[in-house]
Length: 135
Image 1 (cartoon, helix red, strand yellow):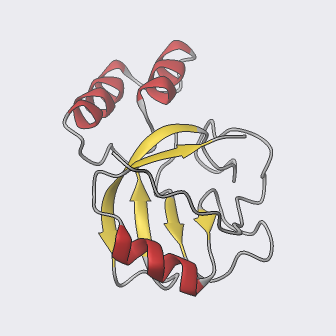
Image 2 (cartoon, helix red, strand yellow; image 1 turned 90 degrees about the vertical axis):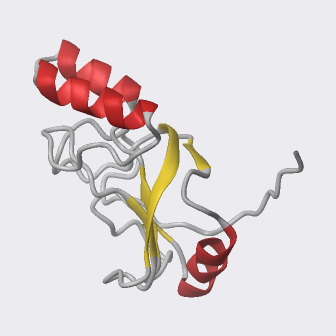
C-alpha cells in the first residue's frame, strides 16, 4: 500500500529527551503504537489517543516491579485486541497527539501539533492507524 509521508512541527513532553517510563515523568513514549481513540471534545482542540503503554513498556514495568502481573496481563490483552490499554497504571497513560501548539516542548508526555495540523490528521486517519515515535 502507498504510504503518505508528511512532516509536522511537534511539541513533546517537558522532559523531551527521555523515553517515558512512569506516570509523572513528563516524557513522551518511544516505540510502536496505534491510534486507539479519537476525541473531538479534547481540551487541546482535537486529540488522537496513542496505545501507550505497549507490550515492551509492560514487560519493562513487570520486570522492574512497577506494575503487577494483573496490570501486565490487562495491557497485553488490550494490545492484542487492538484496544486501548489501561491508562491508569504506574506506567502512566493518557498519551495523545493533540492540538494547541507546537512552538515548544510543553506537554506532560503527549505530542502537540498546531491546530491546523491536528485537524488534517484527525480527518485523515482512522482508529487503528499505526504510530511510530522515534528518538
